Amino acid sequence: MTYRKMNSISKYLFEHLHFGIEDKEFTFIEKAIFLIIILNCIIVVVESEQEIYFKYKYYFDFSRIFFGIVFTIEYVSRLIAVGQIKQFEGFNGRIKYIFSIWAIIDLIAILPLFLVGLNEGFLFRVLRGVRLFSLIRFGRFSVAIHNVTSAIYERKNELIFSFFISISLLFISSTVLYVVEGGAQPEAFGSILRSVWWAAAALTTVGYGDVYPITGIGKFFAILSAFFSIGIVALPAGILAGAFTEKFNKKNS
Image (cartoon, rainbow, N blue to C red; front, side, top):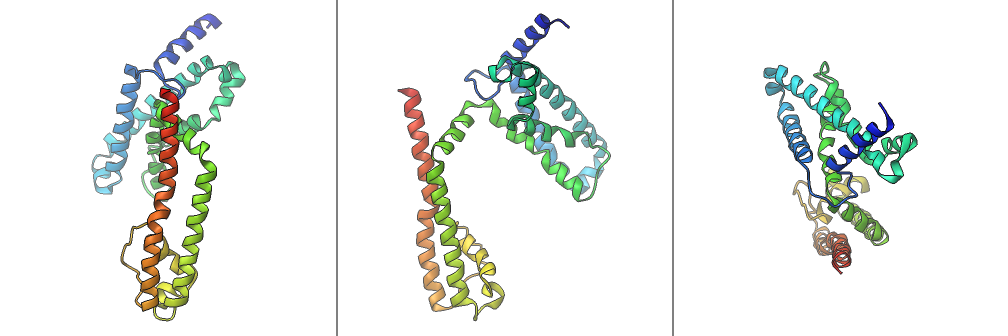
């Protein structure tokens, strides 16, 4: 195949595939890939029910091979088309692309689809779960994902600080509950490590209710933790909201 022919194929594929760096309308091929990814994920969820899987094993195995072939064709097509992007030009550029995050996700999503003979055990469950990686591939179809990751990177210092505050409050709460509740409830608060479960549930405002303080001091501190947790949970959300607003205003100015 001549270079000119290969380059024309590469251009054609590039026009019909998204790489997450261009702001363009979805093509028919991409819409079809959307539907196939969704269908693949639905089948993964349904076939995790063992009774259903073994009853329709032939159809599930066939669908796995079908999705594997489709995603492999897409993977190879992207490998050809990516040469149109300057940083991935030539053979060395394509090798660089293979080790990029999106190409690795593509490969992880594809490999388990060909393991038809494996149908039980821990490894099978792991590989089945890995197939849901195809859902992550939605990210490359939208410039919005690029804006999100960019906003996170621009506010990384503030987010790291809020994470540090959250972790600090988590261990402070765990330590205090260990001190005041450890004697009354040794099974739940007999160590700082055990108390972490309650602190995590309380500070994230989940509150499962399986473990809770029963002493007066413990209850009082639980109330204080609940008030602090409201601000801690809202802090990274506010940071990201500010970053998104700033990016949106820059784009439209």
